Image (cartoon, rainbow, N blue to C red; front, side):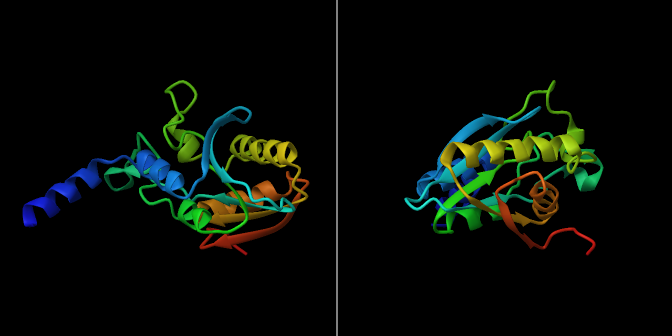
Length: 180
């Protein structure tokens, strides 16, 4: 039994954060798509309910931007535990989870410099790209109201995005790094 437990734990440790997220959304019958914002690409996960008045949009925290105790930018900033994604998959109704630029293996060296998940993670370009993704989704599915829900650094992004979304009716932040 102990050998089996060690084997299972080691296999789980080898699973990438992206593959764990993909398995989670599949279990909860979410759709996964790669979409274009401008200028970045984003991985989105969504589930649409039959009533489409309000869309709940979840935005993840900063993930894993640094390695080696914060001295080196990470090669993959995808969160090891995507808490906002967990919340999204357990939320009823129409739900959209918008991945940040370069997260969930949506990256190449040319279009994803480490500054996008370190010093420029709340930049105008990141905010605009994410807002475009939400605006396009809202328009394509005819939602009238959008509630933004952001965890940690995603809360800061939700506040920054709200003014760029004509359908935004409210913003909820969870442990956001905001100075109110």
